[in-house]
Amino acid sequence: MEKQARDAEERLRRLYALIETGLAELDDILKERIEALKLDRDRASMAFERAKDGARQHIEIGPALIEQFGCMMREKLSNGDNASRKTYISSIVDRVEVDDGQVRIIGRKEVLEQAVRATVPKWRTRQDSNL
Image 1: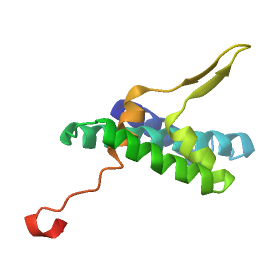
Image 2 (image 1 turned 180 degrees about the horizontal axis):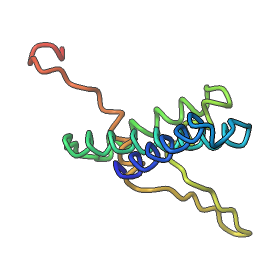
Image 3 (image 1 turned 180 degrees about the vertical axis):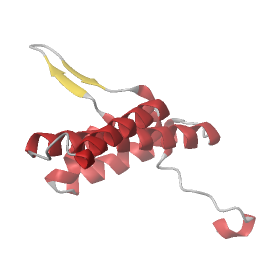
Image 4 (image 1 turned 45 degrees about the vertical axis):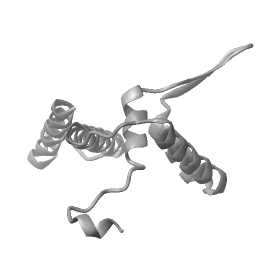
């Protein structure tokens, strides 16, 4: 993930250098490409940070935590606006396949695990501050 972020950053640097030296003109296509590279870089960086945080944090994911996550997602999907609903679903689901007799929701297990872990409150270091 870190390598993907670095690769996207390097491609952005090369595009910027072409523009600065006058070898390329900043047109709509190039603007779209730059935005796509920025988005790739940001996603990879965020995924890398989540992975680092997940490596440091060990939380047992049991039925109670899964239930808490399910309730939170149900609430957000029921009461959120359309843009928010799409964002929440796309954060954990890669694609949905609909067949004549079956619907498959496909996503990465580690992404779902990170989302469930994110429902756990961040504990403070002092023992008496969690009251």
